[in-house]
Length: 587
Image (cartoon, rainbow, N blue to C red; front, side):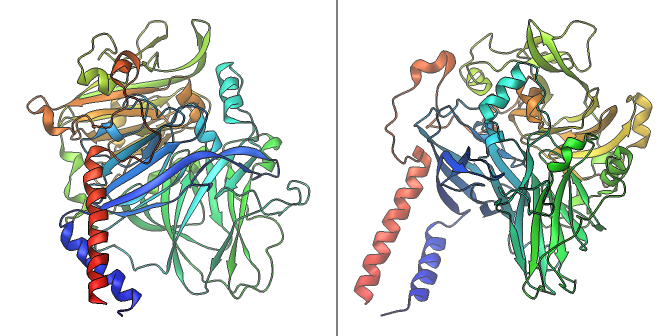
């Protein structure tokens, strides 16, 4: 009888031959409430397959990813894939403008290809303030073996989720935001779903479980760090260890050491960290709020433990401090120091800098101005260029597909208009293969971050004050990093450039959940006028809602892949059965 290792090796080879082409990977997730006490208080959090945070999607560029999601919550659900570009396939984006929600008790299968991407990303629930309850997890997209990585292979890969956290339910928080009540100071900051190590007997009560990361002396680890919180900029640091920045949101960076890094809401970074200390004790891993002045924020500090295998004792004493805490100028200079590694290849063998974005003619300019919440028609709303986005009951993609008039207008203004703020469903009309310049002007009093689905954009400038035409003279037109999320400091602006080569309808949003929920988002429509088939067709398993609800068929609550996936999953079953029969004959 052949060995089990022979069986699996041969089985994999058999599948590689049978599935010649880009591989398919299948995941089956159940999203439900679980009980947890991350800050010592029992509460309902959103888990996936019983885990909080959820599983990590670890895939390789060009793989086809099939995720069957069963919604066992008590309200509709969508998952969005933060930073995954879903080339020509906004149907899978998982936001209200592109997908009908998955009703409670139903399942829906996402299918997308991680085409020509590498790097560190995450997913989260996009509706009804649910991200404040969890439901998030990591996405790792690896290089193909034929594409070299611009650093040595680390000895391990560690994902870290940072999140400001409230013991109030996400439904209570949502109601407070609707009523114009500020979120206030979080009850704590979680690291990988755990509360803080008891570094201070007064601030941290007994009995809270904390994260321990075990490492070996002398080895180097890749730390993928995500701020999956809802509104708080966090400073990340590891006591006595340097953070060598190597990648952010799908782009390799010029490798630079940082003692700490400000990570704003929705942002992701990869650092190489070498275990080069003498391990006289364990070391603190810290995530502390930035740009806050109230003493009440002192309790909102996330603390985990870095434990060497030869550690001689527990961590003790004060946390590593920041000499420049709450200094937005220092933080902005840190952000400006992040550069694109123009000589490294990413998902393709050609250098990242072979796309010389600084030499491309800009075709459209949008100066997008935000403002703090204001009352519009008696309700608290936030705006971009004076418009607070109103999600229609029929998603934009379906309205476009079925040519339903009156659902949305393509008239989003390219600057703040001199008129009262209003609630509307207004889209940006993007020119296919155009090159768009977007300037975010932050007129709020807090740091805001903005994210664009479907694209990576080049961050070319940021500064305090009001953006003017002369500000372009300060742009970095050579090695500004390409990513999908950028911070905009209060009383400041950030400029990005984006090449509109991905047809579809794509969400541009505030990642700060309170700003997003109250209307600070807009959709960017990009249509190929010569060939509308460049975007993927309507999925056969599409859910219908709004004006198209009559098209929806009842769903049996079973594990169901879409029609396309069924071909592959059934073929997979046939292959396994055939191979087992072959193995039985062989034995």
